[in-house]
Image 1 (spheres, rainbow, N blue to C red):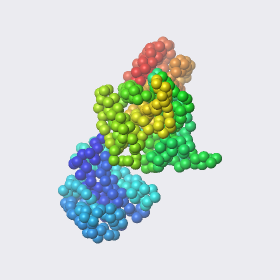
Image 2 (cartoon, rainbow, N blue to C red):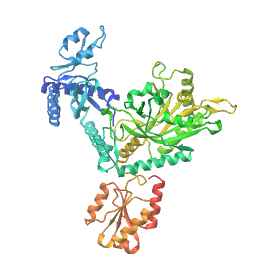
Image 3 (cartoon, rainbow, N blue to C red):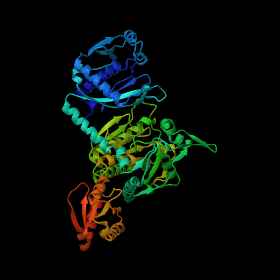
Image 4 (cartoon, helix red, strand yellow):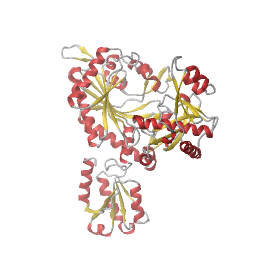
Length: 583
């Protein structure tokens, strides 16, 4: 989908359409007051105070009709410059505008825009007339808060989109419908993958049997790869003492993202937001020689972070999740080779799972920000140059992001573009000279001296939960054979006559490790076949009289109208090849 905010023409058009919407709202609700109405990637929104009224779909229809009247009237959009004093006088009855204006300096030039009877503060720019906003659609409404703070007054927010022509608008609306069909929250419910319940708690998803099968397959997939690369897997508790996070530095830099501390038997604990402090302690449990390094400690670990309720999104962004985490303890001489191995593992996984729409971002510190980052210029220079060198040697293109590094070191993020919504980080690898020093980690070098190791923090699948959300939307719930909760569904044509043969085939396939169901209900064959498609099962096996007499099976792949007949051994070989290719 097009990014409205990055398109200069569409950004100006959507900004103007937001004002048309505000004008329509003001006509329908004369007491309405407006906070902000920015252009966003998906169009625009406006936050408004409707004096306690909550919007409905009928209200959106009324606002849309009023907007069309305003647009047909065709008033020009006129820009005016104001002094701070003039602005304060003009908007003296509007506390939201007064709050904005008071943040300007005394000599600021403040601009407002007027169309017809409606005037609002705005830096602009806008289109010439409201007629240009003809092709628009109000998309949805939601609650919000003044200044985005839940402690402040609740507001109403309306989202919309505007294009220069009807064709582009209709194409975009069609893409939005497709996005709805792909939304992992919708598919998660329909396919019984996961659930949430406010009684359990917001942002605390629970995996149902179908969903946990997928989750488990992903866990086994990445752990098998790690074991072959010399990783050791551990299991650590999902909480830790406050002192642990004070030692790591997270308490000072990350406390606002943690759940509140709790006191038990005179000790203070927190639910852990990340796993590195625990892994530092595992390393510290044993004396190490340089011959032991690199040591690769991996864990699929449960973490908890206090996300704002407005940011929660199914299993893509939750308050508890499992990271495919690992910490590599290396010598300085091993940094380049180990970092290169991590990047190559990311590329291998993405190739196997057919992830193609991604790019690399190298997150660096902001030298001017002395509060956020660990104060060691030499360490930062060495770390950042090392990562650049590795990426350049591998031949990977990347974008540098100043100010996006973790407080303890630079990192490489892999940004993916999912089928639904804006891009996000899936995989990451961070270089860290800081934490090993804070935890006094050492190894004995070849000269008998104690040295401090360097740590690579890396997550290939990132959060398994987010990775699963990505795949649900990418596959539209129709998972490849190796991941599908139910891989094979057996449908006897006439259950009364083929039931025994169906059970025989089911047993043979289950003995091979496949996940198989048998639909022998007393329903029409067409109905049962359609049910198999609705459940997005990769293969539906059809067993009739001929198959039973000749010891064969017939099958249809998901969404295919072609029926193929094979021996059971030929079918097993077909399945094995599909599994191996992750097809």
